[in-house]
Image (tube, rainbow, N blue to C red; front, side):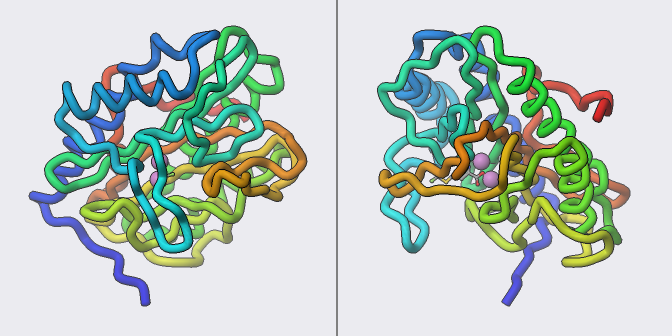
Length: 267
Ligand code: MF3
Ligand code: CO
Ligand code: CO
């Protein structure tokens, strides 16, 4: 049973605040994301910024959806072949690594969820290309958001771009409705067929967060109960925005002064 909520004007305003705050955590952490820092140190810095400066709550900390043990940290850090939900630890980031940092804050009861890719020092040409294609894929998905279009339209443009350059789309994880709850209906698949799936209506809010692998789509779960990697050890990238369906299109809620701008389409 799908129960996709339409947010009221008051809720939308709170989601704008939460989205901007989530993006500002990524702005804050950016200068620290350098060779030698550990993902645990990044977690501590973000945690302190959220709790002490923003007065927000890090939604991942102790998050325990059914079938999972409580998530032990305040952000997710997914390095190289890690697709998503990487748990910050004592691993030192080194030159050439790529890392996704995924931040979800709770502000005044509402969630803002966003992630970006970071290069540690100088990435390989292949790693840079994967991150750029994934960023463009997310934006192509965002740009088809408007009332009357369907969720399948979003998935289709993302899948089409990823596969046209020989990459694959992760199937097991998807974007999601978001609001008072971290993960709400609908599920926003990053693959699909035009004109299929839920019809978009003004006031819906959901994330678009494609995970794209340089190799095959298959995944593996690490024994820590959370971290997901590629099965073939290929690199994986992800970007995420929280998006509102407006009367005539979309509004990206997870924007702040440091958020990268919409790309010029190149792929
Ligand atoms: N932020 C992730 C998302 O985009 C979810 C992380 S759940 C956690 O949906 F428990 F791993 F933090
Ligand atoms: Co999300
Ligand atoms: Co997220």
